[in-house]
Amino acid sequence: MLIVFVALALLAWQDAPPAWTTVAPTGVGFSVQAPGTPPVNPQRPGRYAVNLEDGSFIVDVDALDAHMRQALSSGDKKLLTTYMETLRDSMLETRHGTLQTSSAGDFNGHPSLLFTFTGQIGSQAFAVTQRIVLANDRLYLVAVIGAAGKVKKADVDRFHGSFRVTPAPSPALPTTTAAAVAADGYKSVSYEEALCSKLPPIAIHFEVPPDFIARAPTRSIESGCLLGTKDDLDRVTADPTQGDFSSLTHGVFRLRVSTEVINNPQTGVFDGMDGTGEEGLRRQLLGAGARLVTFKKETIAGLPALQIVADVGADRAYMLYLGNTRFNSNAILVNFHRPQKKSAADDRTWARYVAGIKVN
Image 1 (tube, rainbow, N blue to C red):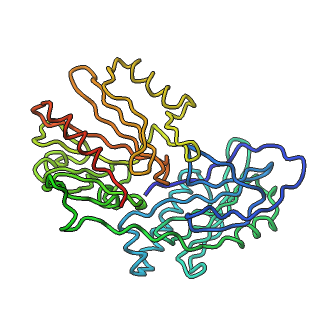
Image 2: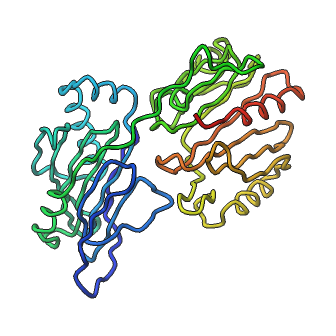
């Protein structure tokens, strides 16, 4: 689970009191009244933040991992409370905060933890009122953070009191079935299965060779998910902390959250977080000495995509960014690690994989 801490925002001067609005993004599963309209943040599509002179009003939305989704479904309140308290303590440790109050209990029928803490950044003391809510297979972090004593209690109460969990779209059902087999024997694997249930599902699937299976090298979201034969995955994960792709027989696909390239949910542009977009990514590759074989912006299964195949030294790198995934950077990265015995068949394997990404 990615631990998201609500950092003290840089505050902009407001000439007049802001107008309160109802924030209810489509398909995200919450509504709240906020003193303004959150601007779009391409680097954090799961964050909805209004920054004022004295404080910030924020809702962060993240996916729960498979273990916590199961606990939420089964109603294991003890485990859910422990999880929320661990998350709270991690936030306090990260910001050197001092816990003031903490209370666990249901919020609108959903597991929740409400707590307050104080701290200091440089010479500036700050205070936080934070609520954690687990619902819709998601983690909602609702927070007001501001200069100590500056944010009106009535505004804090209005923001937190107005937060509601609303119905979110039902998760896509896994599509791997005995009937889902292509003419060449490739089988369908749902997006959720291909990401080892680490990210919120979307309605696409992948096609892979019939003997490929999915395996998570570690429980962290950052490590992603591997698709390959059992023997190849055993080699790669023999030491999960390293990931040895040097002795593969058939090749392995790795899917994970993109951490260095984001996808703008408004424009569909992929960007290396420097504002230069796809052309900037191209320049970075060429500047690193790569020879581009394919650099193609396209739409795959209704999603913005950027496919890159490049020769780097004696090796060939295969990369595919898929956007509009509605989580964190709003993009995932797919890599193909070639077999140890390289051949022209590797290009065909990659092309077949890309062609097999389809809408459910």
